[in-house]
Image 1 (tube, rainbow, N blue to C red):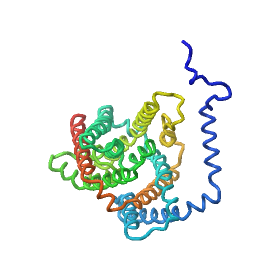
Image 2 (image 1 turned 30 degrees about the vertical axis):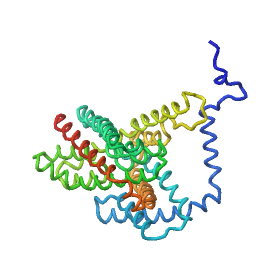
Image 3 (image 1 turned 180 degrees about the vertical axis):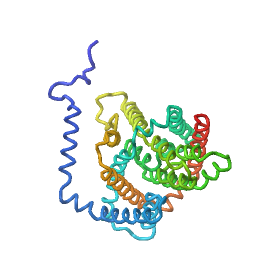
Image 4 (image 1 turned 45 degrees about the vertical axis):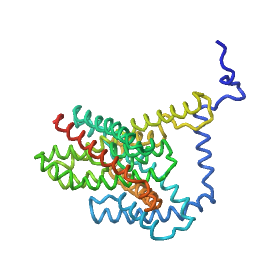
Length: 368
């Protein structure tokens, strides 16, 4: 059959290779960093750096405090109490997007695959079930509630994988148009994850669970790593160590889930283009660069080549980057706008928390 003439590529119009496209993107990125761009970003990034330093200081003084929560609160208070100069906006936007992705990349240094494999096949299957069923169930509930596809996806991944970092990763793939949806998802992670810090240990004690089982449940049910650490410390005994390992196993699921989200996004855009493979519409890569870098950092950690000092610096850098990004996101929180989203996202967040905690508890009891 004669090929469609629209799909035939002559040498003069041949699509550039993927390597050539990456090289062009890299050259464009480097060339964009001229004096004008630096001057436009500097004021906002300087304020983000100060806020990140303040958040890290609070976290150091009061261990177990989520520096990301502190950063968001500082940003929200600043936004709603003080008129912010327009000159800060470029730096804030850069931090909320690029620095956040960089923080997710450095998160890979926290993962040691050997520790995750040490959980055993039963517990690994539980982690996969928590993430898979948690996302699927939350998406279904969000559809019943009539929320937008992007809002329910952000909440589903944030509550099922690793909190604000997962929200940021999803946003990095789908590039959410309504920034309120990202801010709402992050705020809900903070609210419900923080509530789980005292509630889960109390529930574990009421059920008569051992510290080991309680730790497994905490790692499988609570949203943020810092929140898991706080809950594990509250439970005591062997809970903290196993809770963190289970939580990091959930973080490890970030890479395959983001790849699936990217593939779904590409498919949706292709259908929107009428199935044309040569459309000029921008489609996300099969594996986003920051997700690939996340895997690369995890692999580098597994080699054992990095000294302990380098890992400490990477952890500090990750905390600083995520705190700066969360502060920038916080400056976009308009109290009136957040209240205007209505009660439905809160209902979905409550349902997602119960769903993930229920799957985690059932899985831990069966695996144990």
